[in-house]
Image (cartoon, rainbow, N blue to C red):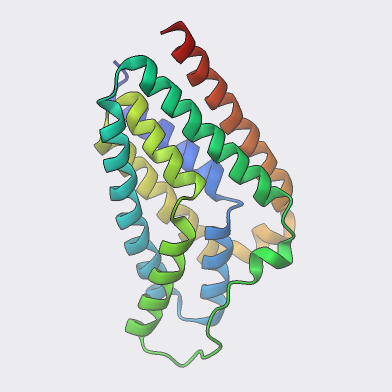
Length: 199
């Protein structure tokens, strides 16, 4: 059985890889350029916490399935994640930055928190990172390690976007990183698919 720390590290690394070029990072960056950083990050963290609980719960239910069905489901989750990432890699940067945020900047911290929570909760729903979290829980059967690793990765990426996001977006081509992440997900899907076939 894989150790708690190993599963935590796998979840953390997988989610960081998926989220660095993701719309979540772009949305956080846009929010932090319009509003105060602290309530933006707090709203993002709250949204990530709720999404991780949903993903971990779904993954825990999947873990109860027979081994062959479980591996096939994990393969499907990662395959869907790979498709989502590839589709995002062909989207233009302009499309990713169009988030439909309110223009006002003189809002209360509570209002900024609410806007940030809503935008990032919606951005994460059914996202590749949520699918990855559910798939990793299903595969390793360690919801706490996976959920904690995923949550800290999401918050870390959001904090990075808030602090130095503009510099990253200038230097890292988003489409290339999306494609690398899509290939990684496709590999995970093949590995899980082979495991399902071997039973």
